[in-house]
Image (tube, rainbow, N blue to C red; front, side, top):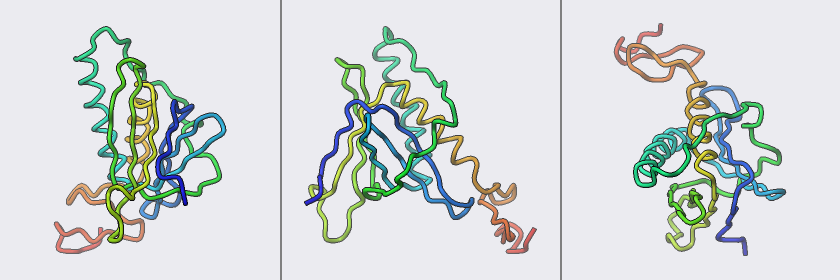
Length: 175
């Protein structure tokens, strides 16, 4: 039986990445603790939502614990790409954030997406225990990564395909 709960405590590194051409990319979150690597499939919108949620969560922590040193956002892009093997354990259905004030660590819990046959208790989970700076870097890198996709149509705000864009604001005419 596969492991249902994995804890990377603490993570050595955590990152998002995308593989493929814009419009056809597959997104991943990958964390590792020393030699153990865990890769999960995620959606672009999950990266965007998590990035926003992380920033809000970190702002709340700053207000609640003003004595904590600020979380930094410096990173080297060359170190933000996933490492092989890219063999995802599962597709993420939801993320949760929690804070351990005694260790000043944030728990990013990824829960497997539920199928019809599964209950919440059947879903596998991975807990990535991160520093506040690791999580802030992850959020900023996630925003940068998702913005590198297809250009956005100025008329309708939807991503434009390289082969042409049928804009609803232009009654479907290509531009």
